[in-house]
Image 1 (spheres, rainbow, N blue to C red):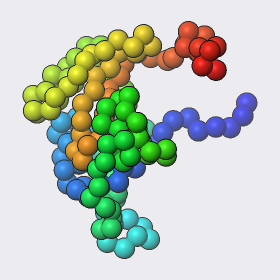
Image 2: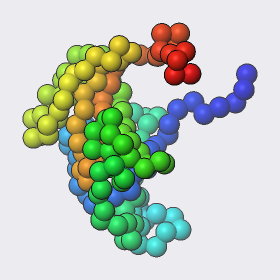
Image 3: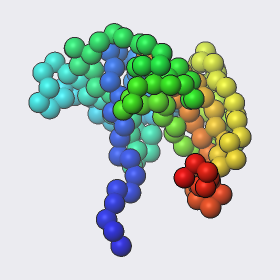
Image 4: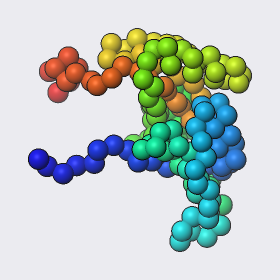
Length: 157
């Protein structure tokens, strides 16, 4: 059996306001702060990790030279289908186990004053969409494994 990664350990997101990001991902989304320290080998740079699950983290890197630029279609997609520069995160989708969990989290996010769209039924999953600090385009989905036979479109392949 070939060796390959078995998941995403952490997704590192650049920020100019690590405090706002940590507050959002802990209070609004319910994660827990697991690490916050000076980043190794990077002068004046903070690195923080919020745990979503014991095997999955969202990390933030606040470097003093991070530019304060948010340009739709270049640095930020603005929505889950929006254009953005190649190599830039278009959006990030996090997982919950059930539709009830998705609806409960939607209500929690809304209770913190954040606009939430959905749930939307995509066939392979149901999800909600909302914006995080600094224009992050975020999604939470539920639906289990993707059945390749149902979702590999021969025309697109």
